[in-house]
Length: 161
Image 1 (cartoon, one colour):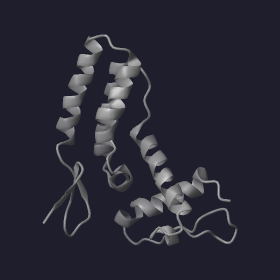
Image 2: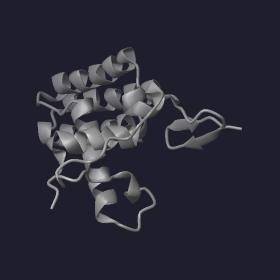
Image 3: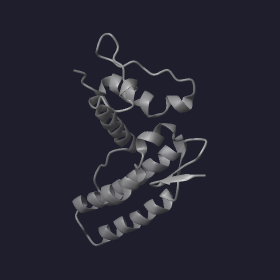
Image 4: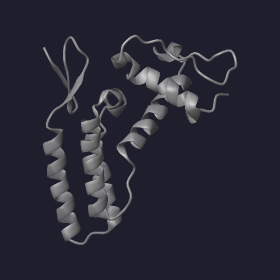
């Protein structure tokens, strides 16, 4: 039995996210973005449309699936961003930057909430500056949210008080 969550499909035995119709959804919205551009709307409106209609599809559940994404999938996602940059004429953040930002935001919210079930996964080392990295045996778990969040926090993403 498969479970659908947003634009993703969660399989019963393997918790993997398979993108459903994301390509067609994005291309449909790019058509509308081009139509807005032809009607000579300002670039601010075009960027707002991109953030609401296209970026929301591209980045749904991004903290979960991005690290396990293949290089070709990452390039395809970034290609959509570059196409949108050409249409709007303004620079946009890369998918990887969006993922890092959201991952850090989610990790910080877990750190602030001591009642969160996963708060215990973020253990400070004795120095009080860095977090203990999580031991993983497989690359699949190494590329999951928590080890990624710990490495981002240790690389200067968090100010530990």
